[in-house]
Image (tube, rainbow, N blue to C red; front, side, top):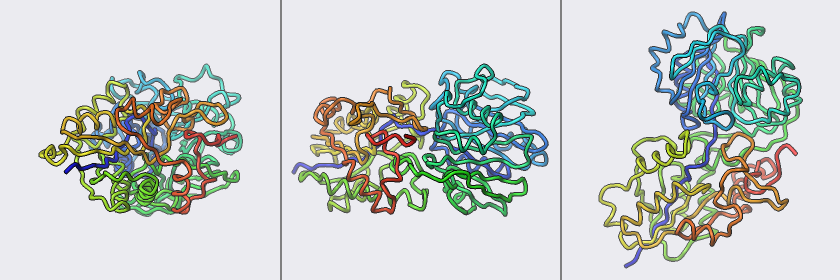
Length: 475
């Protein structure tokens, strides 16, 4: 008997880039950052705010610096608030990870220590998730910038114009926090579109901020609200907060936060990420379900919910077949070589599964396919196990296509896939993509994905779909 297998996986090339945290103890900012590590692992950084603002940033994941040693650098009695940041570069120079890492600072004494950097007695600092165009930041003196990062330019714009004019004048994607020696409160802002996520939470009697609610829930806190797009929050050193709505929101949320970027346990704008992925899996099963498929599986870890939903909807048995040595996401490698090594050395077939896969047909379903590196590795592993045929399904429509307006798509709002990137779907038919990947490729339709979001209670008009051919969110 010949069997077929549906494989749900993810592509290595998609990268969000960053997480921000505001907390009132070093222990909390460190714990929050560890639980948001999936949003960036190139570099990490902390700003400590007290009578002075001091910064430490380092190359690598959060755990590179031990918490005990962080307490020596930032003694608890000297500071009342901490800003944290995890970075995957969308702007700046990937060969200068440490210099371009957050927090960005104005002023201060720089102490370079090889793989980490201390900045003592800063005038102001920023942590930022998103992306803006530096030429739009009118009035800043570019000669004063020490990096190519839009975040540093945003901080200079804030120093020149203030937070209210910044909110009113700047069109771009940002969820950010700023500490300024001229002000007693930490300033937190989310742009009018809400493209990048952020929540206000409560921990040990004091309010803080994180890119995802999972940071609070996993550390014994609770969420107060999603940061309101178009609003400024002022967080006091005692843990209280005030909010000022500056501009009316015009929601254009990034659909890919649900499809891939955000942790599966996160509830994003009142919609659980896991539930959203299940609905996408169900919709894809309705749109494409070949008769010869007998087993559904997934490539760890993001698409598991969609894979299980696909299996339930089609009544096909579900079977995990892969494991990963490390939980890291391969797209977060700093170079193409590092990303490929992360795939090749991290993804393996479970022991003893060769006999269960021999002569079967595989359907490989990604949450997305950008360049095809991850699904190619999975294909090779499965073929080596004796698989007869592979389908390849995606619960995100083709990314990076040329829109009906003739403009090449990509992301300019905080995900590292600019319109100039090499997208496998650009200018190619589904059949041509299949020939390149050496397996039959299918995508959820754009209409099917939008219906899925509506089913979850998210209006299609509130989503940014620019990367799959939709309208520009700021035009």
